[in-house]
Amino acid sequence: MSTEPLPFLPFALPEIGEEEIAEVVDTLRSGWVTTGPKAKRFEAMFTEFLGDASLQSIAVNSATAGLHLALEALGVGPGDEVITTTHTFTASAEVARYLGADVKLVDIDPATLCIDPTKIEAAITPRTKCIIPVHYGGLACDMVAILAIAKKHGLKVVEDAAHALPTTLKGELIGTLQSDATVFSFYANKTMTTGEGGMLVTRDPELAARAKVMRLHGISRDAFDRFTAKVPSWYYEIVAPGFKYNLTDIAAALGLHQLGRARGFQLRRAELAAQYNAALAELPVVLPPQPPAGELHSWHLYAIRLAEGTRIGRDAVIEALFKDGIGCSVHYIPLHQQPYWRDRYQLRAEDFPQSQLAYERMLSLPLYTRMTDADVPRVVSSLRRALVD
Ligand SMILES: *Cc1c(COP(=O)(O)O)cnc(C)c1O
View (tube, rainbow, N blue to C red):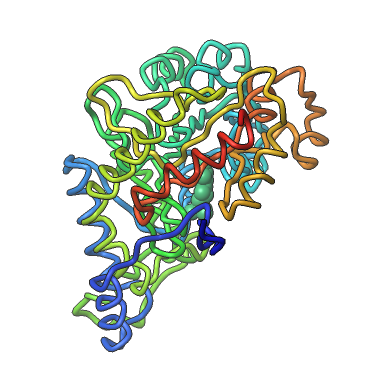
């Protein structure tokens, strides 16, 4: 038997091709490295990808920035409350705090790992302004229920779609639903990447106009206009204390080609997820929530939960896989467990029983397009050794 250890299989890796590299080099040679023609093209291409010309796509340097801009444009501020899931990354919630608003965390539905719509209404108060659903792992939330609750109570909806490119709900791509805004992430480990980056998508022209101004220092004239304008470009007006959230053309150069490959990336991820589903069927684990027939799941994450009564716990499983040269992660340490959120709102694990239970048993397995067909059986063998052999 060979004793040669297999190379380490990281938890995540981006797939950057020669086209991306050539486009970045072209940007560097062009003399225009910050926000300019490529960012503008990337925005147009994004709207085209979503297939709805009534949408505006606004490129930003992170999804966090996009969420912040969306809430700011919706007028979220001190005295307001924003509802989101506890089972998410802190960015989904911290943006409300940037604006002085408070956060109400809600438990998940264990069948989807997304916010439980039946628990949203109990969290609504006269101060509630906005709901931020998160399409956990790339599976669409129950947006029909969430949009209905928002409508009934006069609330805004900003979708955290950091995981959800491309994901569908009833055949419609996330980004094209009737929420006020949707925000995608192009962080290094997401389903497509620009290194750092994000896209704010909205069909509300006022929200779009405000976000564009606030994206770049509160300058009333778009930086893209400054690039293309035929009139002298020195004159501008500051209308608000804005932020520095514009996406560079170096990043957009990556985005132009990554977006072109997004459908193909999804197919490969779905293929790997199906391999995992089949190979894990015999093990004492709960598979990730599956999409309804005919729907796209972006498969950003492949998060399994250990069945009750496994002989070793989650931490030990991650340790065992690591010893076999396999990287794993946990999505997420719920916000109610994080010192800042726990202490600020006196949160207790008992108040979020489903998220807590999922957290204690879950781990995310490697799932990305650069994995080979041999990688899935390798991960599953390692899991089997840890859990049953
Ligand atoms: C990655 C992520 C974000 C933040 O994305 P950035 O582009 O890194 O700002 C927000 N929400 C969720 C759920 C994420 O996974």
